Length: 350
Image (cartoon, rainbow, N blue to C red; front, side, top):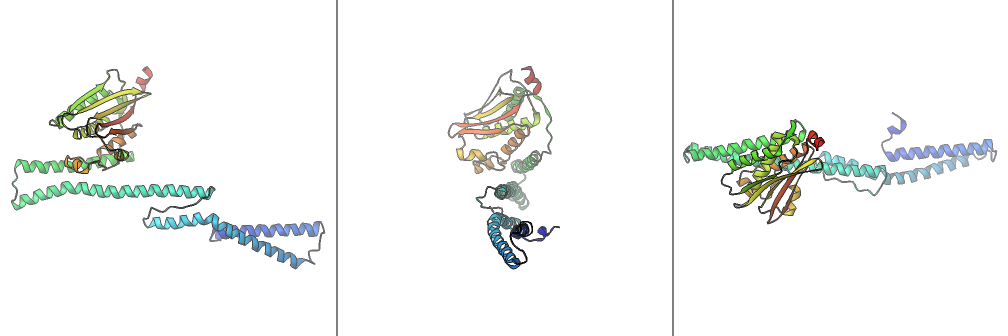
């Protein structure tokens, strides 16, 4: 450890460097003037030289400490902010107008602090939402079981069907949480292959018709026969299409229409799911793909939604190197679009 490293503060280090530099400079000048140029006799003016050197070093030290205080203020602010962040306060920021390395460090610290604050907010929301979503079916199952034990209800098919629906909802929520966790951590490998979107969309539409036979919504497919296949994991894209179509059917009133279309452009295929539902207010669009975010929480929970489907869609599409977004006009409907890469062999043939 060097001598400067033993000093406790940057101001002390900077002051020491300046004092040493001033002292050495004065000594060098006096030696040249006294011994080389013989301007004066050093012995005759020794005390004056020592006094001038001490005065110069003292003035330099005062100026250095004053300058260093302003230079190191952001560093002291960051040290205090870090101590507060250790206690869980991630709202700390460092204010500085400096554009040097210290200012750049302060800006990087602020960005890191903002990201940590966002992560902490999402963590708290996730814990609260997971707790709420798990509590709802568990409470319903507990109530039915208590009623059965007390003789208030009989184990007839209707009661058992309600209990089964709640247990299925609970299992679906756990499965989706596990899928989302694996997707976001990259632990879920994608089995990429050439996928023809036409047959896949028709398969998903058939499943939606079976799952929601009483929806009263017209399902339409508009996919050209010569649409190039995409390079994707078929099961995961099936999951994305099912989630988007299921949401569209659930939020489209009877007599409405849900349309699936796709078109190629610049090496990708855009897949669109459009509905004629009530639409989504503009302020909700930026947060649609967040976990557990719902535009209408009461309706989503009532119809069995978990609030994770769109988050899974985003993770799957981004894992394929694409992106997903939503557009909506309130009162006219919504359009969800995601893009997938065209299979390389197909792109070469084209």
